[in-house]
Amino acid sequence: MKRQRIFCGSLLLLLLALLVLWPALTGRLEAQTPSGAGPVPITFQINDAVVKDKSLPDVSVGIGTSETGDLLVQGKTDSSGRFVAELAPGRYFASFGKRGYIPLANTVVEVVAGRPSVVTVTLSLMMEEVGPGAPRRVQIILNWGSDQHQARDVDAHLICSRGETPEHVYFSQKTADMDGHTVSLDVDDTDGGGPETITLPEPIPGSYSYWVHNYSGLPARLDESDVVVRVMIDNTVAGEYRLASGTPSRIWRPFKYVEVDQAGNAQLMAFTAEDLASRAELISPEQEIFGSGSESYSFETTMIFYGIFGMIFQIVIIYGVYLFVRRIYRSMISG
Image 1 (spheres, one colour):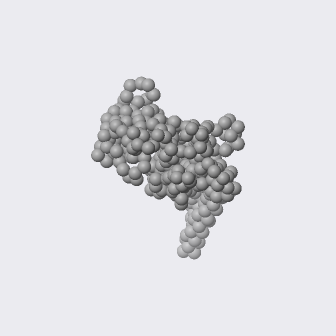
Image 2: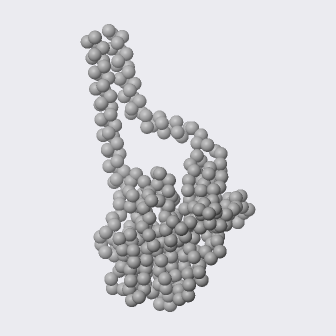
Image 3: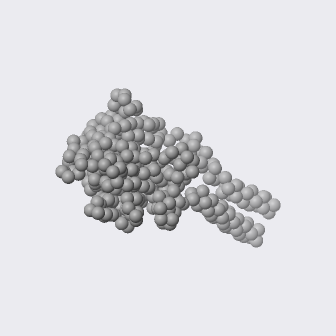
């Protein structure tokens, strides 16, 4: 009988210790286990900027390890707009080109060991292909990842401050029209990858504030969803922006605003050091202009809530195991 008690007590302590230490143990094992240093298949999906699910075949793709060095991989997309490359873990620079489209050069691609992924890339038609009567244009193109752990629904927002009443273009109001000038969002993409493209044809003088919102919410994080924003001014890639990992927010402003002067010339305005120090890039212009709307979500507060919930759940599990073991122990004694 004494041996049975010692055995049951030891078993109970062992189970409790495993439950408490399991996350740390598994995390350490994963960290020590090689995740595969061999080539990783990366699929590039090339789409049109303004037509939903319009894939682009025969796009030339070149991939190298530097912006000016020799290409390691090159080829063309197939009939479905896809190109697959086997790449070792690391950072690469990819370029894309197709006749009639604005070429993309040296866009960054991060390859993680053991994690195949799909990289969605969007190309925009050159002004000559759009047609006559459009001497100027601004396009802001949003892409993001499509892996299971990444956000499925990422939204593009634009506020047009060009008159007494600012206008908000987003998924609930895809167009804004003032004095014959239209700003439009092409589509509300909710299944990952994008693109979501906001187009300003012949933009009139004013400032245009843009931001990205992770509508999916936690646990999918915006900074872990390979978010890329590209700004096209006429036939030029004026800027390419990526949200750095470790940026805890559901809202991100890649640049301060686009300024259009009286002659119709558009210019990207970047955040100053003072702006970045105040975390202005994580606050939506909607709050600043309207005083309400999409909140600047506190990631830290949310994670504290998740942490407390996880601790409570773990305590409940431990207590349940304790009751179960105690029941077995009592039955052994009574038997």
